[in-house]
Amino acid sequence: MTKSRDPEPGDRIVIDKKPNGKIKEEGILLESHEPGVLLLKLDSGYNIGIKKEDIMKMRVKEKAKSEEEKEKLKQVKGKPRIDIIITGGTISSSLDPKTGGVKWLTDPNELFKFYPEIFDIADIKIKNPFMKSSENMDSDDWKRIAKETIKSLNDNQCQGVIISHGTDFLHYTASALSFMIKDLNKPVVLTYSQRSTDRGSSDASLNLYCSAKIALSNIGEVVLVGHGSSNDDFCYVLQGNKCRKMHTSRRDTFKAINTSPIAKVSKEKGVEILRDYWKRKKRKAKLDNSFEKKVGLIKFYPGQSPDIIDYYIKKKYKGLVIEMSGLGHVITEGTNNWIGKIKQAIDKGVIVCGVPQTIYGRLDPMVYSPGRQLKKAGVIFLKDILPETGFVKLGYVLGKTKKKEEVEKLMLENIAKEFNNRLGDNF
Image 1 (tube, rainbow, N blue to C red):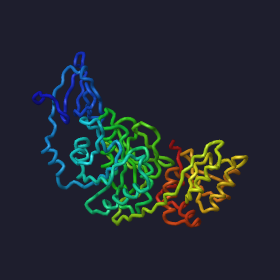
Image 2: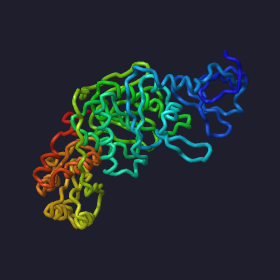
Image 3: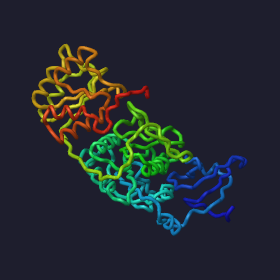
Image 4: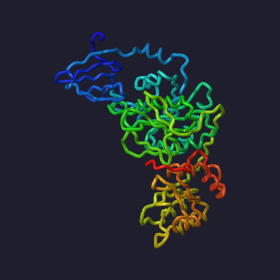
């Protein structure tokens, strides 16, 4: 043991817990913003909080690296470079104990302080085009992120890109980038944190470490990387336009939808490939970020009046995506029959698409009469696509053309693997 002294954040410490000291905890001391509690990062990667009143004895086993030592580590030559585009969200922030507010981690030194492991494997370049919570983003932000990502992808020194993002609408951004970046040449990895760095159960460190591993891998796709279970054991690599946030607070909130994970990543086993994927290539990535904002997403429910469509017609919307029930149904009889309003919208030039609100599975309008009626009316049925991906794709396609025949052809074309013809029981 090193000479005893008061421990500081970054030190490796050993704690003997009351009542007899037989229970010991060892790990890296983290900054804690909760009075009377020490925050400890265990070797498993998990963070735990220990009440000071439960500590019998505490000693420093290894001192934290000095600022000079940290700077030397960051400047080690020969490491591949990863660009991290910080756009906000829990993973890009920490609690400022002086103000009680949240501050953004836009300085490499701050990032190193919370996530030192990624600096062991890569030279990190921080880029922050803007800071926004994901619920405040729109298509203009997706276009900005795509533009910034293209710059990194076409920089010969950059080996891969990580984008930190808020969880709630992350899959919208991931879908948008899968369409807006053409001829993708390197990994584009979106990641997140459900719980902040000052919490014992934070998922940020493992998510970012696994993201760095994938950013240096041979996977040349837009992917989302995050916890694969509620433990700190591994992350899944998910196709960006076929995944969805499925829980409000679980660390493994994102799930692959109508497909399976591309890979599994852990500190012990590295990257384990689980299925086929697009590989990185030596070519120049191209920006294709046109987008029509006048697109709406409607969730159909029992008894719903079709009058809602009047709003979109009045506001001159160019496209509508309807989350339909079953294999592709809305009300097609009685006073709330939707057929007339849908025909009216289509006659006025509105593109109307159907997607499954069941999330899993594929639409098939030909099985029952309601589906056949809707198809005859001109509805475009988008197979097994996610509602969010269908919304993003329609805005992207309408940014290119407003001609119905061309729009329908592009909407049914498998542009970025958004359709999967072989569905598994992965729910």
